[in-house]
Amino acid sequence: MVRLIDRLASLEAVARRAGVGIGTLYRHFPTREDLYEAVYRREVEQLVELAKYLVDPKIRPVEALRRWLRAGVEFMATKKGMAAALAMAAHGSSELVTYSLDRLTWAVGEQLRRAAAAGEIRADIDPEDLLRALVGMCYAYDGTAWQPKVLRLIDVLVDGLRQRPDKTRDRQACEGLPYAQP
Image 1 (cartoon, rainbow, N blue to C red):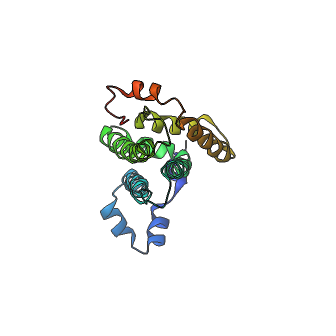
Image 2: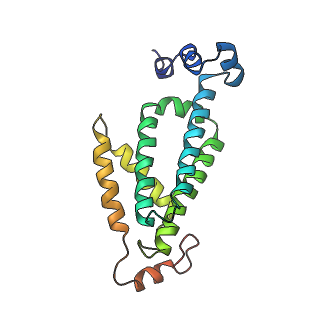
């Protein structure tokens, strides 16, 4: 059986595209899994950087949240095709899983806190729960036409997070929650 990794990309082609020799590539990334992990970490950091950029006062907080979640869908789109390779890279490396969960939870948490502080969304949303919902929506669909469906669901989700007129329940729900700031 041909492994999925063998079909994704030859290291020679990667080296050629990067403009380096195969020896240089192997010195930095001895295995394909090392290369996949490095790319994955870079893309996680790009989502973190996007979260920092979206703190721009010209961008409404709820729209910043929506934009970050949409970028998360794009991130997941590339990961769905590499799921087997990433699983091999993460196999035995709970550090990679912890790293990505921590960084991405922080990033979406920044968007949630800002939108809640502006009174645009409910304040009782756990960032990790929202991140898991995003991942779940992305993996709930198979096939090639899943992204437009998930992007539509992102809009529905964000609209559902909007602040209700009766804010009393939100404040009561937040009491004692470490991630919520009423």
